[in-house]
Structures are given as structure tokens and as C-alpha cells.
Image 1 (tube, protein in one colour):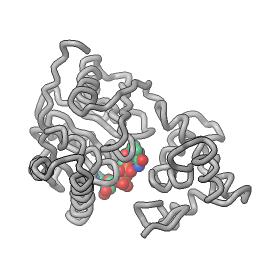
Image 2 (spheres, helix red, strand yellow):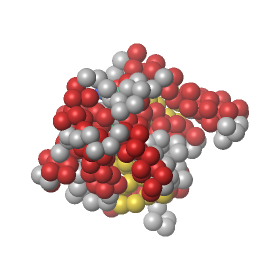
Image 3 (spheres, rainbow, N blue to C red):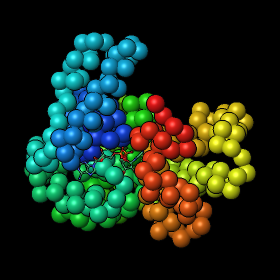
Image 4 (cartoon, helix red, strand yellow):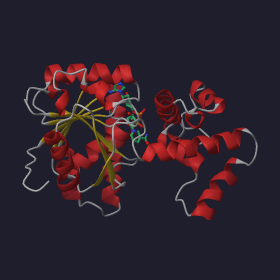
Length: 290
Ligand SMILES: NC(=O)c1ccc[n+]([C@@H]2O[C@H](COP(=O)([O-])OP(=O)(O)OC[C@H]3O[C@@H](n4cnc5c(N)ncnc54)[C@H](O)[C@@H]3O)[C@@H](O)[C@H]2O)c1
């Protein structure tokens, strides 16, 4: 890694949901010029409010000064037109966990981003990076940069090279996440779930199956892991935080990859998503939120 320069000043973030907003915040707080794209003006407004509220909370808690708050906000711009990403050095895609949607975005980014060695990264939790890489004419410049939720708080980033990713792209991504953003990175092969979700998702699905079969109440399941194993959050609360639609999508990708029953989404989880109970972000999931 020594000697690798990382000339990344302008970052694009596609998607301003839970993760996109958090990633944009991390990059802007690191002093970078950040442009955020969403599908519609309404989604953009929701995302901008989410991001600015998080920054205001950071200021209230004394994590940034009021001058830093103003400067960070000034480094952020918002658009619904991916064409405005032409001058970006790095783009991080963080839209819904849907292969077709992500593939189309990578095709557009390939067309619009002009810098020859720009990095095109995905925050996907489970979709094979190589599928996104080969949708572009620069598969050597596509890499997985997988943040954790909430991105401004969690220290870890998983770096996932596709089979096509060059060593140069991977090294620049590592320098960027560690030296520029101050995160800790681990590397994983391009296998669905990488390291953390490959371990976490079967555990969350087991907890949902346990709740579904009536073995214990949701509170007892969560308290069991919080008070018995010192986890900061029980598995049902954590599923609500991640987003139940995301948990289902990641489980489906992993089931598709490995064909193991432990990755199969329990019927209750699927029905909750069908009902629009997506967890915290929709106001209800295993719990109800104000
Ligand atoms: N939720 C987590 O804990 C978590 C953690 C790590 C990684 N991820 C991954 O991050 C990605 C996003 O997850 P999330 O939790 O932020 O989801 P989310 O539902 O909160 O946000 C997704 C956002 O993408 C936007 N979007 C959809 N299509 C778009 C398009 N074509 N262009 C621009 N924006 C578009 C939506 O409007 C929405 O705001 C997924 O790939 C997920 O697997 C999620």
C-alpha cells in the first residue's frame, strides 16, 4: 500500500437512503466534495433531510464544531441527474439491493464518468461484484466498498475485488477507505455475503424462525442476545435497523449462491416485507417506531 497516491477529491454517491446518506456524510466530513443522486426530487429531499439531521446531531453531540458543520454541508450537493457525475473521481453506488437496478446504474455511470481511471464502487451486501463490473467497459475499475450501518459510526469497511478488478483499483480503494476516511478495512472474495453478512444473515434468519415458531417472544429473543452475549442489539432489533427488505434481498442472493436452507428467508419475513413493514425506515417491523 505504501507509495500509492489516492487522488480522489470528488465523490459521487448514488442513492440517499440509510446507507447512501451515511456514506455521503462520512465522505463530506473527510473533506471531500460529495454529490448525491436520487431518483426523484421527493426522494432527494428525504435523503437530504436525513443527512443534514445526522450532521446536526453530530454537532449537538460535540463531534463536529458549528464551523465544521457549515463547511461539511457546503461540500455536499444533490441531483436527480446522474449526468452530473461526469467529473467524479470515485462513485459509490448505494441504491436498493436489486441486481437489475444496480446493473443499469453501472451502465449509466460507465457512460457519464469521464475520468479514465475513476473508481466505480458498489455498497452491495450480496450481489456479485463481477456482474456489475462486466456491465461496464472498465471492469478492472469496479470494486465493492461495503460500509456498515450507520456508516458514520461503524469503523469497518469490507473491500471486495471482482475477478476483473485490478490490483491498482483495489489498492486505491484501500488507501481511500483507510487513509482518507479513517476506516478499518478487511478484504473478502466476491462471494455472496462476503465476511460479515455470511455470518450475520443466517443468525438473523434463525432468530426470525425462532420468533415465527413461537419459541420465545421478540423481547426475550433480543434480551437473550443482549444480556446473555453482550450484543449491543438483539437480532430482531438489528433486522429492523438493517431494513427487512434488505435482509430478504441479501438472504435471497445468498440462497441463490449457495443453495443452503440456512439462507432461505422465513415466510414471516417475506410477508412482513409484502405488507410494507420494513423495520425502522417504514415505522414498523418486529417493533413499532415513533
Ligand atoms: N441497511 C443496511 O444495514 C446496509 C448495510 C450495508 C450495506 N447495505 C447495502 O446498501 C444498499 C442500500 O441499502 P439502504 O439500507 O440504504 O436502503 P434504503 O432502502 O434505505 O435506500 C435505498 C435508496 O436507493 C434509492 N434508489 C433506488 N433506485 C435508485 C436509482 N436508480 N438512483 C438513485 N437512487 C435510487 C431509493 O430511493 C432509496 O432512497 C443496498 O445495496 C444494501 O444491501 C445496507
